[in-house]
Amino acid sequence: MSPADVQQLRTVLDEVANALQGAVGLAALIRRDTQNAADDAVKLEAAIGGAAIALRRVQPHGPGKAGR
Image 1 (cartoon, rainbow, N blue to C red):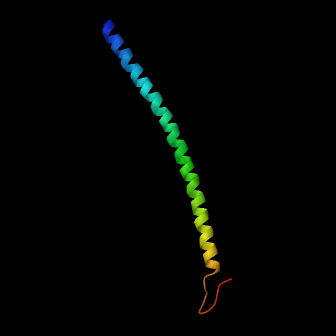
Image 2 (cartoon, rainbow, N blue to C red):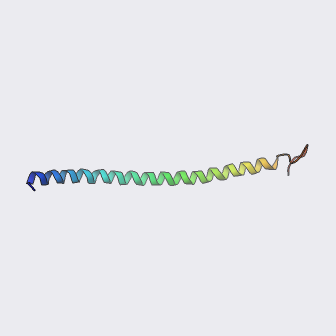
Image 3 (cartoon, rainbow, N blue to C red):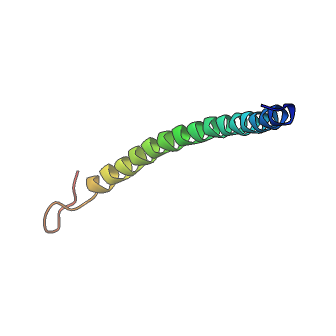
């Protein structure tokens, strides 16, 4: 391999290493954001469930009867 080829290979490997370093950083951000979204989804599900339970308490169970 000629010295020019070696230098070109080093340059390309440096570019690849820098790009991969950026990709690893982005992957970490996506992982954190995904975990936060999953946590938020669990909280949302619980809130909707709580609202449904509250609505069922006041839903009539029969003609003219309020639920308790």
